Length: 439
Image (tube, rainbow, N blue to C red; front, side):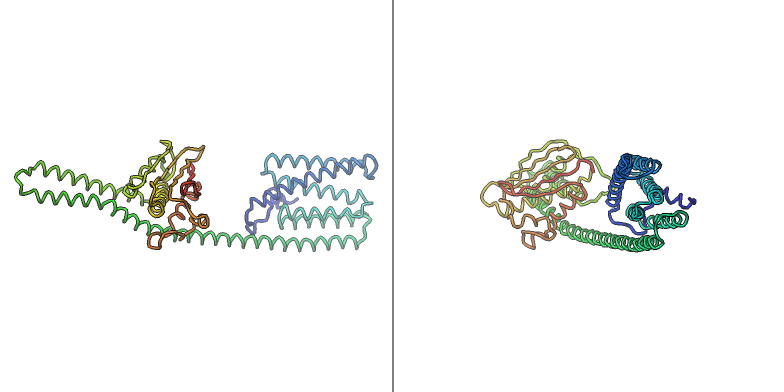
């Protein structure tokens, strides 16, 4: 065998001219097929050799021993491949080449079998499936050389017409197999390109939706800041009016002025802290995942939404100091979206009874489970499966964009490697979040 052929049989023989979609699945299929070939070849070689012992098949001692050796070689290859699939190409070559050698001996040792050349046909077929087009063509050429050489040197008791028919059929099969596999590879490659294009389109669409949500969310944030500032501004105005009214009074002292200034500084500090809280929430830091506590992130959300929660009772059943490694702002964003939806639902649908949001948080193996449940009556069963769809909203167009829960699901399931689901409870709507403790 030339150096070129040695290099070929010692490396990956599978044709890589076209990328086959899901190559891992293809490799698993080829390994499974090779296991079957090993076991089948072992069974039949042992069976024929054993039957010859009882003179059921007239085989000479040499060929009988060769069949036993062929079976042992196949069973050895089977266990070698089972041990480690990195030996696939080695064991495949052992199977194909040992089959060629065995069938070559059969061709001139078992002259009473008129159909013995069929085994070469099966070997060619197996080489195409197991090794690809290039490998199959090389094995087929070797088969043709072997058959022609044997026919010219030994009396195989086969006519020239029989040999010609076999070679013609083998070459015709090769042509069909070559074009058939080429067609499959091209179709697979085309499908892979289409899948990639669709994935890119989906990612681009998600980016557009995310940008639209951010713009909408910024407006909501500004509204929230305005809501947070309204009361401190009113208090500041009252303090200034009081100071102005009392300036001319003799009883008004510098100490009174200092106290009023101190009150103003407290209010402005609160307003400044509000800006910092929302600015930190909007800031993106995707470079480094940090360690944070899930319960502390929740308390930050409740602080940000405290003015919206004035008429709502928040019940908490929370395991403290649950440590997470990830991006805290993303979890805060998800919690704000879900709790804000619960607040809106309570204001819209719960007019008479006490408004309650129940939040529970617990640690489960490698996950943190968070549930947020309201008593607003639940979601209509006909639309509950649609609430995570983009642009779907039960609010008026001016009140909601229909992107909040869609973005929340993307954040939880893609960024946090978790799950976000919704169901109706006995009192209202219940959102369940499960996120990995370590991204």
